[in-house]
Amino acid sequence: MMFRAVFDGTLQSSTQFTGNIALKLSGIRYDDPEQSIATKRTLSKAAPDEAGKSALLARLLSEMAKGLPLERPAEQSGNVELLTPEALRPLGAAQTVIYLGEFAKPVGTKSDGSPQYFINFSVYDVEFVNGNRLCGLHQRDDGVLDGLLCV
Image (cartoon, rainbow, N blue to C red; front, side, top):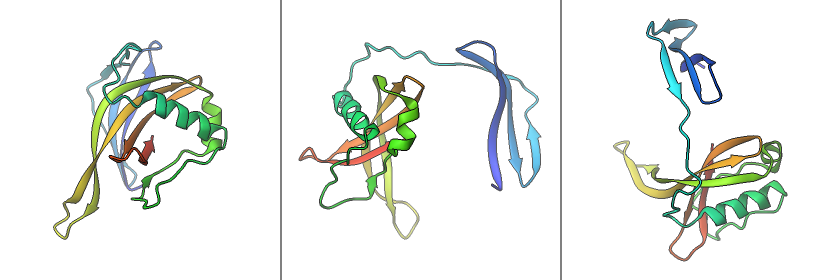
């Protein structure tokens, strides 16, 4: 990788870490001399699910972890990106699915470099037994799932 930004730090507790931000460019490293302190944000399990898709997402992830195929729309827009069952199994079962908000994902590119259009994804923090992922999903107006992204 030619360029990357990193955070080199040390865990101080289960919710706090300290360290320095660094930039690395072709083997040359710059360290910010200011030490940063960060705290893990604690999410409430009682937060309202304004998009109403947490149960759907939990079901989809459970089915995918079991190796069941995800139903895909007939006209696929290319937005369905899946974690493989092999990637999901080490995470264990999904324990909590917490709604975070909406994200407008740019799709396609016009000749001037701007997006052709945006798709609104409902974004959730999914806490598994052995880790967590941020997942976003989108359903068409007819209820068909045409977007599922997890990082």
